[in-house]
Image 1 (cartoon, helix red, strand yellow):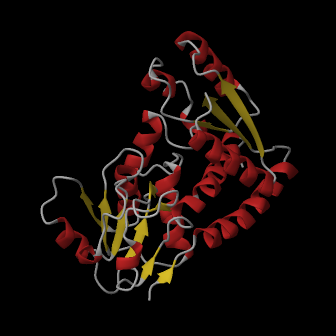
Image 2: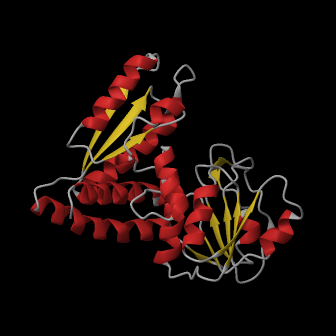
Image 3: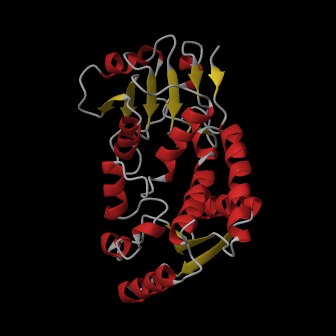
Length: 286
C-alpha cells in the first residue's frame, strides 16, 4: 500500500513559515497584500477565491477582491487592471481566467507587472521560469507539485520524471521546474507512442492531462512516486471528483501517491500566498 502524500500537511508547514515572514514584513512596516481580479461569478472562481482569502487571513496577509461585471467592456477593464496594478499597497495579483470571450485576454494579461504576477499570467513571468530566474513566479499548481516533493523529501536530482500533459498552465512550466532541479524530464502528450511504457520508466510520474482515471495499472511500476494534478468529475460516482489517475488501480502498486481531492489542490493557495510574500519582500528590498 502506497504512502499518501497529503496536501494539507504540506500547506500547514508552509503556512507556519509564511506567518513568520509576514510578521517580519509587518515589523518593517509592510503588510503583504494579494489583489484578486474577477470578472463575473463562476462557481470555480468563487471556490478558489474563498480558499485564497481564508489562507491569506490565516497567515496575517491582506487580500482584496476586485469584482467586475461579466459584460464589462475591453477599454474599461483595461483601465481597471491598470489601476489595480499601480496600487502601491498591492504586492501580488491573481486574475481569474478564462475571461469572457469578448475580452482580449492576451492583451489584458500583459498589463500586470511581472513583479506582481504571482500566478505567471504574463509572458515575462513565463520567460523567467524558462530561464530559471528565481525572481519570476511559476504558476501556482506546478509550484505546488514541487512543494510536495520537497516537503516529503523526495529526491529529484538525477531521477527520471515523466510529465503527462504539455499545457502552459501545468505541463510545460513544471518540466522547467524539474529541469531546474536536475531531473531528467520527459513530457508526454496525445501523440506519444507507447504512453504506458514511457510512464513506467519514470521514477516520478506526474499526471496533468485533465482526463478522469486515465492512468491505470499498466502505466506504473513498483517504487514510483505518482503526483496527480487532475481534478475531474468522477464518471463512476456522480457528484464526486477524481484525478487523472485511477487511484484504486495504481495505489497498491506504487510507493507514494497524492490523492484527489486532498493532494496538489490543497497546496495551491499556500503557494499563491508564498509568492505574494516573496513579491512584497522583493518590491521593498528585504
